[in-house]
Image (cartoon, rainbow, N blue to C red):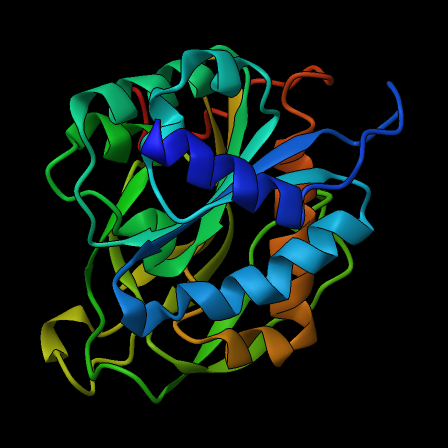
Length: 255
């Protein structure tokens, strides 16, 4: 009851009044975990944008909403920034079930790709897990757009970033939209390694969008980075309302 009372107060602060069936949908924005990824700053950056797009936004600094089955059935999209956290079995099952049943999920950097290290099925849903960022922060690198036809990256050119360059273990069947190549300056054995930066996939009936960009909010001052994030969030939000084609894109030959 204590959580529900606090949660309702947050909803009153951040939710837009419903305006009818044509609303874009209902978003649950969850933030917390490691403070180094500035979850509050991202809340302040993205919640107003989501509201401006017409979404009703529920904001929670707890994972407890995931365990509320009635609430999760009403959510169209989860936007999550929660790095290096611990999730209970009920919370995990609630989140996985909602996505499998058609809810979308979207996020960036460690807030989605390094959230719950002991939850393998969560990693299976997201399609990847952070394992290293050679050289840490302040690394100049290029993001290469590899799919120029997908609506999330259409019309965008390659661009440069100075931040953490995420080395990830990734499902080789993701539909990858952008990559980065490591130069080996810090870990020589990964020179010329190509790692996905942006991908999309399905988990059950739900859409999953991920970008590894965004160690700090200033990364999204880069127009291409912000465009990819916003387009990816909007794409994932339509999970319940649009047919999603098969996104399996095998990297390896079947024979």
